[in-house]
Length: 317
Image 1 (cartoon, rainbow, N blue to C red):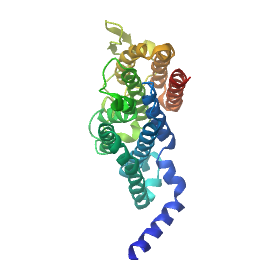
Image 2 (spheres, rainbow, N blue to C red):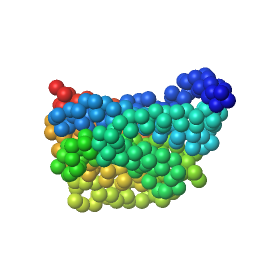
Image 3 (spheres, rainbow, N blue to C red):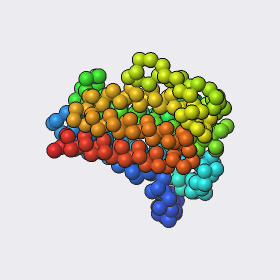
Image 4 (tube, rainbow, N blue to C red):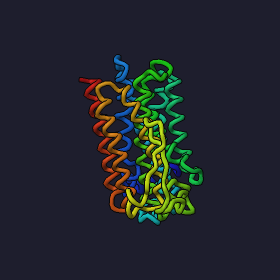
């Protein structure tokens, strides 16, 4: 009876803050994970709808759990960005995390009963997402973990049908989504570069003041086999020195991953141009990050929507 008295106020408190708590789950991210998981099963023709739906539901809830836990861990730092909900509602947020994590266990148990390998794969994604919140000081590692958590569901279908290999479309889809999400995370880091110093070792923070306008910057962008020299002052007038070195990283990621578009069949050509568009978008961000960073994130989100739409049409119609 005493336990019941404790539970009822907790649920009432969560309900009274439902709008902020729901926002902390990032519903659109969960929807993205859900759709990607369904897509991963559809790549192999014979669609196990029950397992695919349960797995997609599980990973969608897992994604929400990861987002809420990250907000809880970063609640003090996020106040510097004007985000105060987590810091002002720390206890309800943690209770909400426990609640949705418990909800994720239900479909996870069902997956483990049907296919233990797929269930363990879901647990690994969950563990990576939680680990992200403890690695603020590891250079680029956080970006890699986010990109992995957002792209690994592309392998769910193959975890059910067999061992992943480099000839499968799931591999090419994984590479493309990994690159796109990685770029999106770097752009977010550019947006937060003024408040991340001393707390996170992000690419824009760690490369600050390493480049000067008079420098001749060198980079190699696949598929070009040679080095290109860029006169920075001429081509990027008024650029921001603290973020320009990230251009080489983005060029490498986009350059190599764009080659993977060939493995996506009819969706490969438009995807290739979308990837090149992301690179051009990033150049706009370099020139004026405070003006173009939000526009760039929206463009990348639109790229993901177009990619998903083309692949869903290709596989279901």
